[in-house]
Amino acid sequence: MKIIPLPRSLGAEVIGLDLSLPLSSDDAQVLKEAYLDHLLLLFRNQNIHDNDLIRVSSIFGELMLPPAQHERSGIQKSDAAPEITVVSNVKIDGVPIGELGDGEVIWHSDYSFKEVVGGMRILHGIKIPPSTAGGSTEFANMYAAFNDLPTDLKDYALNHSIKHDIAYDTNRALRMGATPVTDPTQGKGPIHPMVSTHPESNCNSLFLGRRLAHYIMGESLEKSEEILDRLWEHATQERYIYRHEWAENDVVLWDNRCVIHRRGPFNSSHDRILHAAQVKGHKPFMAKEAHTLKPHSRG
Image (cartoon, rainbow, N blue to C red; front, side, top):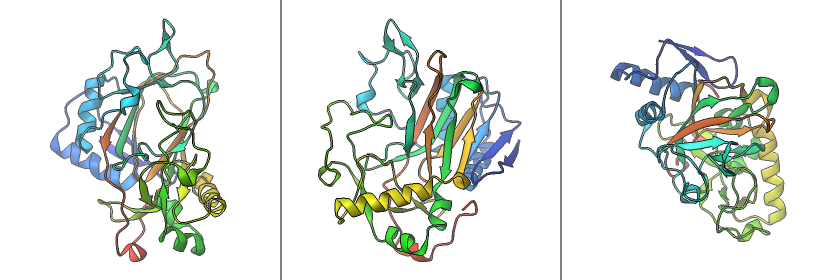
């Protein structure tokens, strides 16, 4: 096995490892260390099944089931395991086999609308449109985004928290049973620190969740919107981004606690099917000594 850093702000390609085979304890440990060091790992040409995806995921922690609103009965027509999220635009008899369709998906971290957010997230490309059809996934390094903040914004971020709206998903669609949010100060959702200290790397990253309907606690709506716009503009600069152009049987896993991601739109005349799994992360916190912590090596 070789681990080759990608020439961007985050990521490494893992070569010489077959994820369809059981991993030795040594290989599993190497993967966990590479994951913490590089934030994202890429494996190509992996002919695997859902049980392999679940087995690999379990190396990184306790599996996290998809949210209740994505239960497949009546909403999705899929025979995937309960631990698997199907990401697809394909329909059978007019019923989607998965979620998110073929529209653009905004920048986000998974499950930031929960008290305990997502940890490791893994995607397996099963059916992929040609590269000319779109559908690439971008990942941005929030360690680096925090470290590079202008002094005024960094001081501000270290002293403020964000209420993470629960009403809208990453397609900007209203979640099942949710009430539309017209005033983010009155919205519902968990409150997380704007700066999150990683429990394993002991480094700080920005924790923004997603942009839509979020609110900085204690501020006027006008100032909250202004600061959030500045933070998101900073955090999604090209220098922090790795853009993955999918091929069938690619597997990408990343640390959702310090990486945000988005998917661009693609030509809906092409079928696109990916299977995902997720492990539990933790309730975001900022260490008391956050002001003095060293930056991450990929920061």
